[in-house]
Image 1 (cartoon, rainbow, N blue to C red):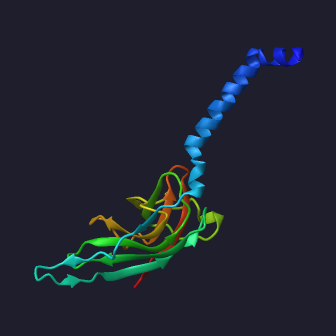
Image 2 (image 1 turned 90 degrees about the vertical axis):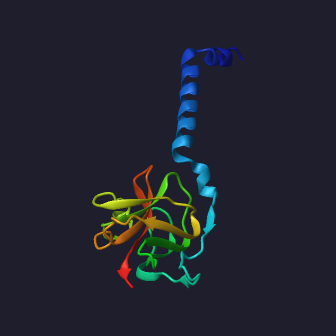
Image 3 (image 1 turned 180 degrees about the horizontal axis):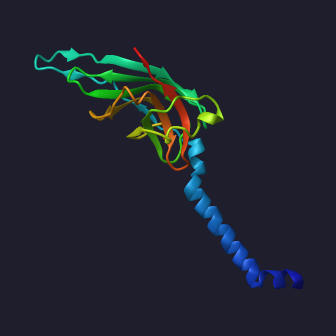
Length: 175
C-alpha cells in the first residue's frame, strides 16, 4: 500500500496523466470521432425558376456523374444544372457518405482516380469550393459561381478540409 502512495505522489505521474488528458481532449476536438455515428439528411427540391407567367421552367442538365468511394464509402449521383435564368447549380442526389469534420463540396480539374491514389488529388490544381456539405445523406443543391469555368472543372469531390482527403468523387460527363 505504501508503494502505491509513493507512485501517485510523484510529479512525473501527474505530469503524464495531465499530458494524456490534453492529448485525449485535443484528439477528440481534431478528429471528432462521434461523427462516425451521426447523420444529417437533407432533402432539397430540384431547383426551378418561376417566370412572370407563373409557369415553372425546368432546369437543363449540362453534365452528370456517379460517385466512387475514396476515404469513406460514398454513393450517389451529381448533376450540373442550368436554370432558365442562366444560373448553374450542382445537384447531389441520393448522396450517402460518412459524416466528418469540415466537409466541403468541390468542383475540381483533377481526374477521378479510384482507390487510395485518388484520395488527395483534388487540391493539386484548380478547384472551387461550393461550400460546406449540407448533409451526408440525401438530395442537395449548391450554387455555382458565374465565373466558374465548367470546361476546366470536370469533377466533384466531397472534400474533408481538415485532413485534405476526398471522401468520394465523381467525374462529370456531358449530358
